[in-house]
Length: 146
Image (cartoon, one colour):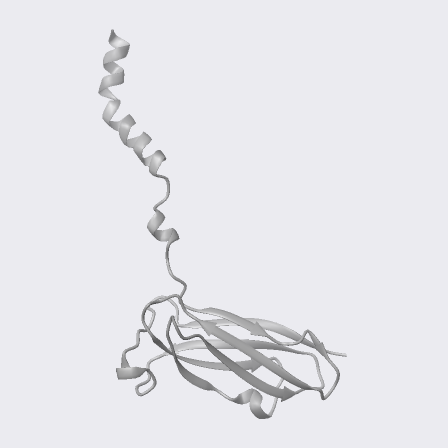
C-alpha cells in the first residue's frame, strides 16, 4: 500500500514527463520558412579564355517581398560583366534568375552573394521586409581552367 501511495504522489511529475516525451520537439520550429533558396550553376571546367556563363537562381519561402542585391566575388580579379550587381524585388511567387558572362584563363573560386538590403523604389509600394537574423547568403564554386 505504501508503494501505491508513492506512485500517486509522484504522479503529476511523472505525467508531465510522459507528456513531454510524447510531444517530443516543438513541431513549429520544424516548419520554418527559408529566407533565401539559391542555386548557383557554373561549369566545373573550361579551356583558357572560353566564355563562362554563371547562373544564379534565387527564391524565397517567405510570404513577404524583399529587396535583394546579387553579385559575384572571385579569388582573382576578373573583368567585364563579372562585376555586374543586380538589384531586384524577390517575392515567394516570383523567383529570380541572374546571369553573368565572363572570361578567365586561370582556375578561380567564385562566390555568388545575395544581400537582403533596404532600398526604396524596388518593390511595389516599397513593401519589403529585412530579416533580423541573416541578411547575407552565399555559395561558392570552383571553376577549373584546363
